[in-house]
Image: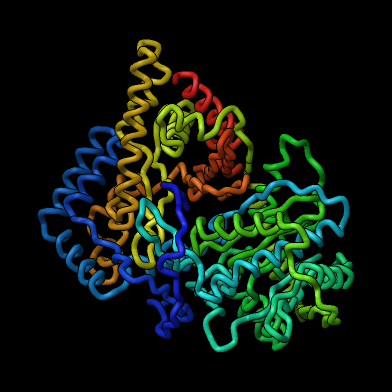
Amino acid sequence: MLTLLARTMTQAGRAKPALLARPVGVVAEWKRPVVQQEGLPRLPVPPLKQTCERYLAALEPLLCPEEMEHTRKLVNDFLTSGVGHRLQKGLERRAGKTENWLTDWWMQSAYLDSRMPVAVYTSPGVVLPRMHFQDRQGQMRFAAKLIAGVLSFKKFLDNETLPVQHLGGKPLCMDQYYHVLSSCRIPGPKRDTVVNYAIGMTPPTHITVVHNFQFFILDVYNSDGTPLTVDQLYIQLEKIWNSSLQTNKEPIGILTSQHRNTWGKAYNNLIKDKTNKESVRAIQKSIFTVCLDAPLPSVSDQLYYSRVAAQMLHGGGSRWNSGNRWFDKTLQFIIGEDGSCGLVYEHAPTEGPPIMYLVDYVVEYMKRSPTQMVRTPMIPLPMPHKLRFNITPEIKKDIEKAKQNMNIMVHDLDVRAFIFSEFGKEVLKANKMSPDGFIQMAMQLAYYRMYKECCSTYESSSLRMFKLGRTETIRSTSVDSFAFVKAMDDPAKQNSEKVALLVKAIKSHRTYADQAIHGQAIDRHLLGLKMIAIEDLTSLPELFMDTAYAVAMHYNLYTSQVGSKTDCLMCLGPIVPDGYGVCYNPMASHINLSVTAFNSCEETNATRFSQSLEEALQDMRKML
C-alpha cells in the first residue's frame, strides 16, 4: 500500500485480462482474469541463509541479549539440522509450479482465513477533501458525477487499455486493477471466498445505491451499452432518495460488519429465503456501491477529519450510518449529506495503490465542466429497483446482535486524523531526505519517547514488480533506527551526531525497502516456510514456536504510506490490541496523517501518539 518511487504510466504493454477458468488454490470461486504482461518475472524464493541473517538483524533492537542468544541457537539449528533446507526445497518446488508461490497463501492467511470483522480490522477507509453541499441536490449532483467518473475509468478495464505503471523503469503487475470493480467477498463458516463477477458471459451493468439502510439496483448503462450521463444519473438518484425517506427500516447491511463466523451463519440463514437470496446476489454482483449517508452531528474543524475517518471505517454506529453499508463489497463510495466524502474498501482482492489511482482519476474527471461531459438523451428511464428483504424473527435477532457489536467496536476505536501543516515532502527532498524514511523515523522517535523502547513496525511495500505480486513488509525498526531514537534526546550528543545517526537510519530503511520491493525481505519468506511445514503435516519447527517469532510478528506500529495526487487521507485500524494503525500521505507542503488505537487498551492513546508524532516531526526538522 505504498508508493516507493515515482510511478510513471506508459501505454507500453497494455494490460490484457485473459479469462482463466481454474479456481486459485482453495479460493473456490475466485477466477482470475490474468493480466497478460509478457516478461513479468516470477516472485523469487530468497536464499535461506540470507533470510535467517536478516531475521536475526531485525530482532536485535527488540530483544534482550539472553533472548537474542536463545534465538540465535534456534536459527542455527534450523539452518544446520536439515529442517530449514527441507522446507526451502518444498517452497522452491511450489515456486516452480505456480505463477506466484505467495499470492494464494497471502490472500488466505491475511484475509480469507481471518475471522475478525472486516470493518475496522482489515478494510481501510479513504477521506476525500471536504465538500460544501448547499443542499441535498448538491449531494446528488456530486454522487452522479462520481459514478460517471468511475464508469469512465471502467472503460480502460473493459477495453484493456489501462496504461501499465512502472517503478524504477520496470513494469508493474496490473492484475489487481481488474479485481476492484464487480467483485465481492462471500462469508463462509470457516473461510471466506472472493468472487469476481466481471468474468463471465454477462458482466454486471448495475451499481448498488444505499440510503436510509435501503438498497437499490441502479442500472448505469443504456440499452445501447453507453453509460448513463451525469444528468441521467442525477435523475435516478433523486428517484432513489424520494422512495427511501422512511428511517425506520431494518439495517440489513450491518450484518456484514460482524465477526466472520457469526456473519457466515447469519448469511446462510438469510439466503434460505428466495427473495433475500436474490437481493443479496444483486448487491454482490454490482459494479460498486454508493452509500448516501445521513448527516452526523457537527464537530469543530479540528475534529472534522477524525470524525470523517471514523465514518469511513465503520459508519459511526447503528444510530448513524453503519447499517448503510455492505462491508463485503470491494468498493463502497460514501457521500454524506453534510459534505463528508470518501470510501471504504474490502482488502482481500486489492492493495491501496489501485484504489488511489482510481480515486485520482475520478477526482480529476469530476473537475471537468458539464460541457465536456456527454449531453443527455431525452429517454425516460425505468425506476431503480428497490431490493426487498424478508426479516424473520431470527434475522431480526442477528441484526440486533450486529448492532450491539458494531457499537462496541465504534466506542473502542480511537481515531485521530489531522493535517501536519509545517512542512511537506518538498522540504525533505531539499534536505536530501527520503520523505518516507523521514516520516518512518519520526514514528520510531514518537513511539520511543512514549514507551522508552522500540517495537516491531510494519510498513507495507509492493511486490508488483512480480507477476500477481501483492505486498511485503518493510521492517522500519532497525539497529540504526534504535541508535537514532536513543541519541535524539541525549543532551550529551552533538546536533551533528544526531543528524548523522538520522541519515544512517533513513539509509538503512531505504536499503530494507529496496530489498522488500525486489522480493528479498523476510516476512513473506518466513510465512512460506511455515505454510510448507503446515501443508507437510510435520511438526512446526521450533523457530516458529519461539517467543522471539511472536515478538517479531506483533506489530505495535502498523503503518502505510498511501501516496496520491488528491489531497486525501487513508486510515486503517491497528492489527494488534495494543498497537497503532498509522497512515500518511506526504503532499508538497503538508502531510496528511491518521492514527488509530483501541480504547480498551490502557497503554495506547491515539491522541497522545499523534501529538508525539507531530513533536517528533518538528524536532527532527529543527535538527536539520
